[in-house]
Length: 417
Image: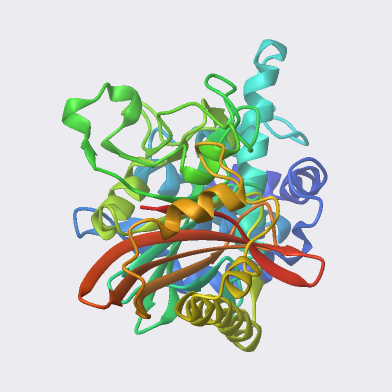
């Protein structure tokens, strides 16, 4: 075996060149990616034992191929397939490496038949997505732009980048976001921007995990469990978006992963990754932001955007306390809409019903702000409003959607939650 590997090691360069051309055109920095990720080769598994990081080993295999180190590539792919026997992409690469002992191999999936062309394409897409995401892993110190401010009791936030087929899990450490882990995911067969039931698209927006469904109560298709999301949310509903059953979930026990575009709209993880995420989140509190692409920015810019969101809310609060109708309405868009179809004026009149005429004192707490995916000029703010008007005290949780019209930020939609 060893002599055969030496004899055929020169094939590795040609094979790697084919990978560069057909899997990842910009894989020239794969060696740097491998160096950067080497420290994360071992990750905690749900059982607490060490587990092989599949993305890291794939990168190392490609690096070994680029350096004509066929024997080392074989060793690493063996390690990967031993850890995850159902990992079809790894098994495919292993098959190509073994085939090199008998004949030249210059194509990805040389052992596949023509009838398996679609499956081969799916595996190529998965390989590209996995390595592309690791090459473009957010630099330390950069912050996901959609997350402006979390409540103190929101200990995690999840972001899904559909373009990269990647899920990022962040920790809220005293107001500072820290990347805990990132994971390969699959999403809707027909992409993103879900609009109706059965369109096999994944929604984009800000959602929350509503429950944790145990795998023992679900078909094997969902793996070890599911985390349902509150799709459609209020913004989806007011914009006529429908459908249901959007979950984060795993894969069947006979599988390791699915192609990047493979679900009916859900976000699908490998089973080890799902178990890790499920053990980290807080039901009802953990936000899940699904976007076409996540932008990462420096802390200074993130802080400036957070201050902007807080200023919008504070100015609205002061105007509300003033009870000056013109000042209050200046915060709202003329295109303001409600679930019931009210115009701004008719809605505003209803909001004043029940006031005792006293000068209110208003306090806002437990504030969150997010840049809404799909629209950089929209901010969704959620907060608890406490009002003392004379002897009347009230408290309610409220959500506002702010849009930028020309140079002015205004509320386009508001609802109690």
